[in-house]
Each structure stands twice: as structure tokens, then as C-alpha cells.
Image 1 (cartoon, helix red, strand yellow):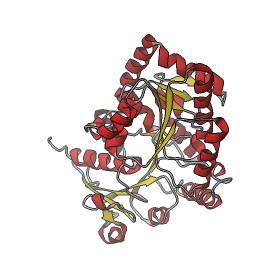
Image 2: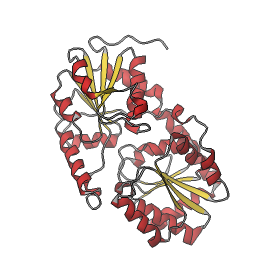
Image 3: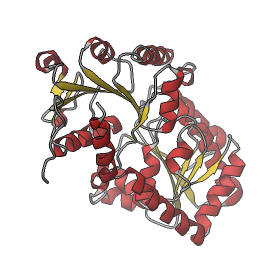
Image 4: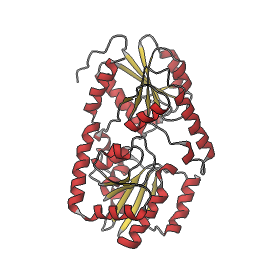
Length: 363
């Protein structure tokens, strides 16, 4: 692809990330932006204090940043989603600066389960607030996140959504997972790290209601990383017995191949999550042709864009009836699957490139 001529005095763009992990949403977005910057004619570099081994060829250690950074010519781009030393580095750096806000969970969700993490989230909020007057541009990857920035005093944050890149999911899946989930049982899927804002206890209660009162041929798959010692996870395990929610599968951390297979094997994506900043799993479900039933909270309705069946509040009976309706009526399912695939068109690589070109021309 022919590179496009870069704007004057902005020949290099440097991205800063608090951590870069394989399969992590923020890291994936930074690597996609790295590609886009190069295609638009810019030199691009990424720096982080924490880098997974497979990504060390693409991301540089943070200690080399100060030596490499040239504030007179470089554009600095910070991805903000947690408290880190990068906040102070970004604040102190001179030159043109963009801050992209990926949201973080409000601290009160973690207070009953992990007070130290709740404290860290409060610190992240204070660090974010401290950046409001030092950015050339503040970006929110959803209108919801732009609203959060406005509440913290950021002037005129710019909507810059995440990119959905299908090539990430173009693998053969996992034969072992496919065999495990094969059969007449309906597979209800939720994809997420295990965290209190996801309201997985409500999800399990809804699933138990479906099993007890509507149809018994279902299993619930919760695909996401957890820690056996985490108090919220232990709370959920206790709830399995309380709700008699037999058939709940906590997968733990999954590979990309395994995640692909879970989506391919799913009959429904069901979410009770109460706080999301973007909610990429909805777009993943749309891509794999999995209809979505979700609680309409925070950014969920915005991300879905009319392509999901939404419910309000924590009424598990209402959500269960809606979920089974989607499972059982082929015409409704087909319509939702089609709308979901159309919704993906708003988050394509091509649209991101156009948005990015316009954004960079304003700096």
C-alpha cells in the first residue's frame, strides 16, 4: 500500500501504554493504530513498562522513551485505562500530546471485594483529572467515555471509536472446545474478565431461572480470566450452589483460538454488565453471528446500536424470557444476526483510517 505524505512537523507518533499483553484490547488497538500511522506516512513507535514476551519485537521498553522522544517533532499519544507512572511522564512532557481514554471501572464496584484495587481506581481517576489541561486533544472511544471526560473538566473531547479487525479471529478455532460444546444443549455465552461491575451473579441467577422454569437444555459459559483467590470469584462460586445454577462453565484465561470456538459454538450472548466503556465482546458476537441480549447500561446500548435485544434493571425473569425468545424464534434470530453484521460497518479499519487522517490534520 502506498504511504501517504505525513503532515509537516509530525513525522513520528509515539504511543505510551501502561501494559501490553497478548490479546489485551488496549494493546490490540495500539498495534492497529501503529499500522494505520505507518500507512498514513508517519513513523510509529510504542513504549510500555510491561510487555509480554511475544510482543517485545513490536513494543519498546519504557526506559528508552526519554532518550528517544523529541518534543519538537514527535506527537505523543497516551492510552489511559489505569493508574501508572505514564500519567506523570505524559504530564511533564512538552510538545503535542493526545490522550485516548479507554475507561476504567468506578472504584465503588471493587470496594466490597478488593479495597486495594478500589484505592488504585480512585488514584486512576485523580490522575486522569490531572491531565485535563495538558492535552492537545482528548479522545474518548465512545460517546459515553467522552461524557466521562466532560464531567472531569476536559474541554471538547473527541469521539474516536475502537477498531474492529476481523483478521484477529480468522483462525481454525479449537477442536477440543468444539467437541466439548457439541450436542443439543443450547450454549449461552458471556465473554469478560471476572469483575464485580460485570454483575455475573445476576447472569447466573438469570441462567438458573431459565433452567428451572423455561428450558433445561442450556449451559452457561463465562469465558474470561479469573484468580482462584479473588474474593469476587469466590463469591460467585458460592452463588452457584445458592442459585442451583448447575452447568456453569468458568473457562479461565483463553487463547484466541479457544475464544473463537466459544463464539462459534454459542447460541446466545447474554450480559448483565452494569459498567462498560466500550464493550468489544458485543462486536465479536455480531461478527460470529451470535444474537445478543444485554442489560442496557452505560455504553452497552451505544455499542449495540440497535442490533441487540436490551433490557433494563436486574429483573432476571424478564431477561430470561427475552433470552429464550431469541433462542427459540428463528426469524428473530436471523434478523438480529443481520443487524449485528451491519453494525460492524461502523467500526471498520477503513473508517478508522479516515477518522485518523482527519484527526491528525487538526494537530
